[in-house]
Length: 166
Image (cartoon, rainbow, N blue to C red; front, side):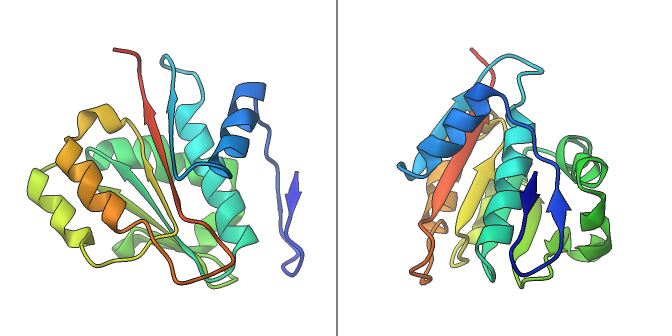
C-alpha cells in the first residue's frame, strides 16, 4: 500500500521479491533490464514504478513505450485503470497521458516505425520504460536515452527496460 503524503490517495501495490529488488536496483543504476518469461510481471513492474515515481516526485514526467498501439492499450493503459481506478479520471485520451494531481505526467507511446522516435528528440523525461525493448533497435534506445534527463535535483533519471528471454 502506498499513500502519498500531501494527496489523500492510496494505491494498493504488491510486489514479488524479484520486482522489489528491481526497484531497489533502479535507485542505484541509470538503466535496468528486467527480463523474464511471459507472465513474469514485467509490465506490472513498469506500471508500479510509474505510480511510485510520479507520486513521490511532483512535477515529473514518465514515458511508457511499446511497439504498437494495441499492445500499449492492452498491456498498459487498460491495465493501469484496472489496477489503479483513480487514474482514469486524470487520463486525457487525446494526449495518451495521465495528468497526476501533483503536476506529474505519465505519457504512453508506441514506436511502430523507426522514424517515430524522432518525436522524442529534445524532450525531457525523468523516467522512461521501454516494455519489450528487444522489439526496438539500438538506435531507438539511444534516441530515447538522450531524453532521459532532468533539471530537477530531487530525482535521478533512469530507464527500465523489459524483455522476454531469447
